[in-house]
Length: 201
Image (cartoon, rainbow, N blue to C red; front, side):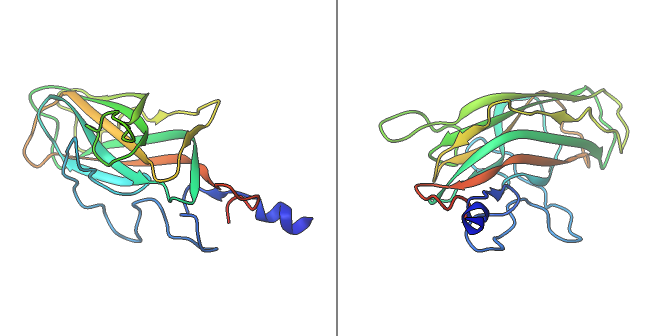
């Protein structure tokens, strides 16, 4: 009975399911700063379940950028209990205009692209608002935005082989030279093995 209790413990979100010590899911390597991601609506900047991120400052746009896009293993379901995001300004002070960062979570898309739509067996991401951060015009290097911390009272299920996206829109911003926006993203939750009483193995 004790073995069954242990076996049914789900895997934490920081560790990919599979082996006893599965691969780390977050973009967070030892003594390494994140490489600057390319902002795109169709190709995630990072293929991890959160972690460290950064990108060169861009101009205002209504585009939804896929900062993170992580596909859940086909053998497991992921239960998302919340998302935390911290953001800091680096490289150069914010110039010309303020910077607004509108964050959301996308779940259960069948593809990495945020432009994926519902059609037959194809499904686009189901979006959940996370919150907004901002830097005022002139914000110095080292300015920190108010952290975003969310907790879902009812965990959100992400089905096997579907994507978890962390999405950013910047409706007000300026592409100041040398300015880099950097941060951390914690996707909270756990993996559960599908169709097996030994959940999490």
